Length: 495
Image (cartoon, rainbow, N blue to C red; front, top):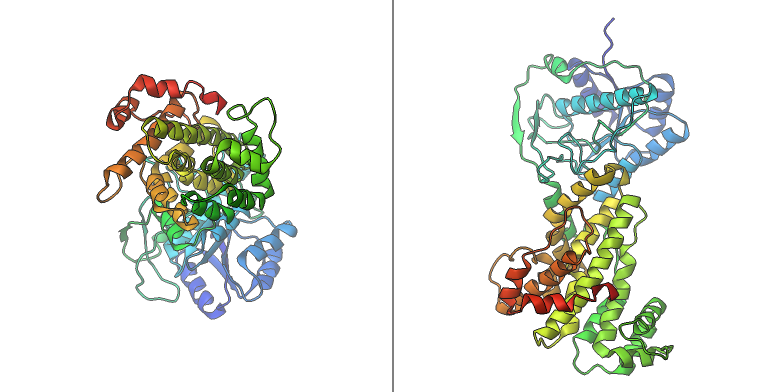
């Protein structure tokens, strides 16, 4: 007896979903349509399914709400969401709760077939594990050429571009006639993500099922890459970024004022206990400390200087953003923060060596120039099961950071309202910016890149196989002698 792959379709528009279920039946899928979450739960208690496909917002609950209900009831079944364009937070939540895919609307038969196939692969993998097969690497859409991405319109490629064209058969669109093909890919790499399914294995290739449909093949569509998509969403304000304390803006305003006095600085920094403690700690460090410890914020500001006290306040504010609790990323973030400290202090020393007017501003530039890497790692920390262990996973992260951190850095600092000079450095320090660049901006960019390269050269690496920039060339362009620059970083461990 022929057993067709089975699908439970959950959507509030029951008439439309039933018509699409009939279309799926003709393509070789046994589809059942229900109108809400309650009906879906009842159906799942009676019958096993190879995949449950749920509209994001149902009349009685959300897709995530339904998934939580199923988990509480110990109903384990491959699950996928569908709908319009979700925000990244929704995609992350779907992943966390075990979704194997996210499909755009209007649904197409070939897209649903592919989702069923991926669910079947997951079920096979779960069966292999129950039979004693090793788990292997944890899923990583960052480095695998197999399908997998938290962007519903892309999937990863070995090149690091994180995008791959997707095509198929636009057999019948749900609610639209002759709609343009819409690429889709899974939220997870099906080789690794484990979903325990109670459904029996009833799987046939999508190629065999497509033979039922006479629709012509569609040309491949070119999706927007994950990097471009996330950067665009950053600029549009659609991605939730780590918030920087409002006091950072006030600190920056004071740094830009030539007439700021000690009392104003003490009043501002004293309004935040963490900054007060941080500045006092730094003022008592080996770099500034004397035999008599400083216990008063006013004295601390006098000891280190007005502008430096404000720069140290920036350091204290940013330090709180470098803490994540995902083991492979936590170590990376800690090493990155150490590199940031050395880079910032090195930028200040280089600025003094060059006789620049505001060395403390270069300290801040060194502090924030790689903030795009910070933002990306914090995003990755929200999806720890997508990272392969060991060097493989770290190298995949390194490729992503290298490809995207300047775009992210520019967008993040714009969101934070940082001055344009810092935004320019964050957005273009490894590569020249688009458009003309004046000599001052060029030297600021080169100075920060040189400071970062010297930090890498001194061993403050945080990514696998990390190499510094061309130190000799950067020194030449800035009019510096390599030996003098190396002398500046001799005591970098004390910074």
